[in-house]
Image 1 (cartoon, rainbow, N blue to C red):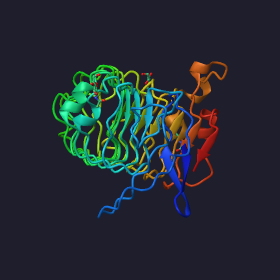
Image 2 (tube, rainbow, N blue to C red; image 1 turned 45 degrees about the vertical axis):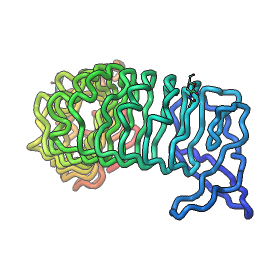
Image 3 (spheres, rainbow, N blue to C red; image 1 turned 180 degrees about the vertical axis):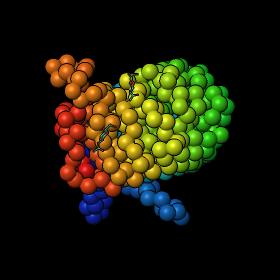
Length: 369
Ligand SMILES: *[C@@H]1O[C@H](CO)[C@@H](O)[C@H](O)[C@H]1NC(C)=O
Ligand SMILES: *[C@@H]1O[C@H](CO)[C@@H](O)[C@H](O)[C@H]1NC(C)=O
Ligand SMILES: *[C@@H]1O[C@H](CO)[C@@H](O)[C@H](O)[C@H]1NC(C)=O
């Protein structure tokens, strides 16, 4: 999933620098060019490497630190340039790439005229705070990526049209109340790898997110399931928390939930009501690295099940089969178990695979025991 973008820098000696970055979501991106190399700025007494300048541009307003693709005038590329400050962004900019720099402030000056900005990538910088005055002006913003920074709370006054908000890998331990209330168009909220506790995700914090599809709260310090998860949620990721139990009616109203990840928690049989994962919309269920002794019941629609690294000593295919084995109609798609992948290594189960399991789950393509 990683693409490597290579930049070759020719200083007095030839030095090749290889930068790896995550693949950007699908959007037209202009062809990358080798940056034109100017002399580094006079040395400052810091540890920061010198700023890498962009090539000469046909646009007079192109910031000198950036690359402004001639055939894609709405995009400005300033990523991987050792920037510590955001340059003044031209008014025509819609797609702005500032990831992988050393930026620690997002100031109003830089964005004064950038009211058309739709896509702002500030991943992997050192940002502690985003001023209200900046976000308020960016009313067209759809994508805001602030992953891997030093934020301690979710920025307030988020633009109301936002569709994707990435805040993973920060130090966030506070969600100001009402901060997500007006974000009706938000489909992806990534708070993975922060310092959130139950108090932060309790009450009605997610309630206004009517169109949220993906909620990622993995790698935080939750002991309970978050409350009032938006009803349209399709993907809920809660891996690497300290969740011990799930309320019995938790998934009742989440009729679109298809991907549920609870790996690396503290779930026990007692904390997991018998029928809790028998959810007819569910396709993918991750329960690895918990404390389960039994395989939970699941619906015949489930395709992938991860129950590896628990304390399961035996698996009874008859008991977990969604239908009585003899009643399964193998000609009818909807009357047979769909399970295709089952991982159950790291338990106390030893081969061979029980015959009743094979009889029921004939659609299994892969099984790890
Ligand atoms: C912003 O736009 C105004 C009005 O179009 C213009 O006068 C000003 O120079 C611009 N500022 C910057 C920093 O581009
Ligand atoms: C799972 O749910 C289905 C449909 O809601 C129900 O018919 C079935 O009995 C449940 N399975 C178990 C083992 O309770
Ligand atoms: C599996 O469960 C069924 C139904 O509860 C039971 O009849 C059967 O003996 C069990 N099989 C094994 C191998 O324990």
